Structure formats: C-alpha cells, structure tokens
Image 1 (cartoon, helix red, strand yellow):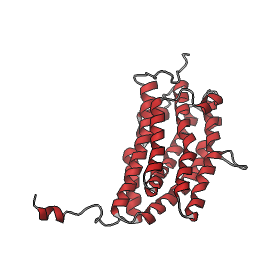
Image 2 (cartoon, one colour; image 1 turned 90 degrees about the vertical axis):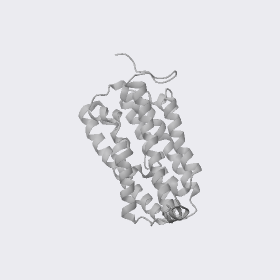
Image 3 (cartoon, helix red, strand yellow; image 1 turned 90 degrees about the horizontal axis):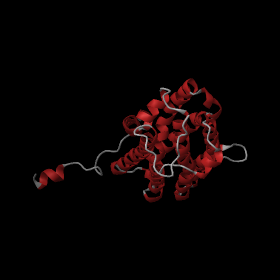
Image 4 (cartoon, helix red, strand yellow; image 1 turned 180 degrees about the horizontal axis):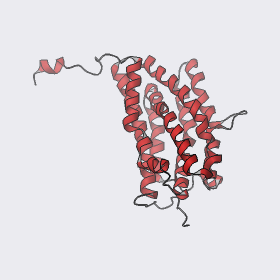
Length: 256
C-alpha cells in the first residue's frame, strides 16, 4: 500500500461525530449484541428451569455485584469536577445504600436472597461467592478507577437495556417461582430508577465526548461492562448448571 493511500484513510479522530441519536443507537446495538439477557443462565431462569439451589447461587453471587455498585458510583462521584454532575450522580449512591427515608437497593437484594432461602448474614459476609464473580466485579471497579471519567460514566449504560430485562424477569419469577414474590422489591424500584439514570449518562457522554475517538472509547467501555456481566453468568453456569463444578470454598447446593 502506498504512503498516499495510507494517509488518505480516515482515522477515528477525523471521523465525524455521531449525533445524539446515532450514539444512542450504537449503545443500543451493543446491548442487543452483548447484554446478558441472552445468556443461557438467564434463559433457564425465565423458562422456570432453575432449581431453588441454583437461584440461591445466583442471588448470592449477584449480591457481590450489587454491593459494589455504590462503591463504583462513589468513585465516579469523586472524580467529577462539576457540582452539577456530582449532585446528579450522588442519587445513585443513595438509591443503593439507602438513607433515612429509603432502605436502598442493597437491602432490597438481601430480601430477595432471603426469599430464596439463604441466610442474610451469609450473603452480607459474601460466604461462598465464586472466585470468578469476584474477579469480574473487581474489574468493573478497575474500569471506573483507571479509565477516563467519560468511559467510567459510559460503562454504567447497561441501564439502557435493564428495564426491558427487569420487566420480563419480574413476570417470569412470579410465574415460575411464586415463593420469591416477597423479594422482588429491588426490581420494582429499578424500573423507574434505571431510565432516569441512563438518560443522564447518555447526555453526559454525548456532551463530553469531543471527538469520534472519544465516542468510540465510550462505546467500548459499555461493551466491556457487558462482558463483565456475561462473565458472571458464565461462572454461575459452569459451577451450578453444566458441568456443575463449584470450586473449593464456593456455595454448595444442598441435596433435596
């Protein structure tokens, strides 16, 4: 290839900026391709094919993810130089940690875990969580600590897709696992929290990504977050579905 032909090729830096709708479309396409709504573990859940023990393993391991969400958001909050941004973002911490008027998402998830039959103290202590769960979730903290603030914000945008999955999940959990009905408050709250949060985050990325290269970094951050969610379910499937090999120290499903 000649020097001239190389020079004539457009780079990501020189590519035109995506419009707000084009950027949103790119985010949505990422979710359709990579979000964990298509994972075999979730498909089994929605078909009513998971045992109580498998749901316990899911609730326990997912708790570790839930527990770091306010930590993740506190890191992002601490990096925000703009008070308007910080005021908007800090509600996410309250949504999960709670305050004087609200119990918060973490406590609601404990209720869900308890509804599966788990000991709440065991869940809070993280006893039996899969090593792969810890690695995947801790990588999410690495993203928000070590990449740009723009990428950290973009990594939260799985909220764009979560409302649809949560709506389906609540329907299927009630249908197939009626004994979980008292533990579904977490999902009910996210149905109105997630759309508000994602709208702010999309607008922030659009307003602050000044080049196409920065927009592409934001899209990649969302892809990486989707991979983290998928990896958590891979670990659950391997340990508790097929081949069913939980590692030493991990939660064990009790024989019925």
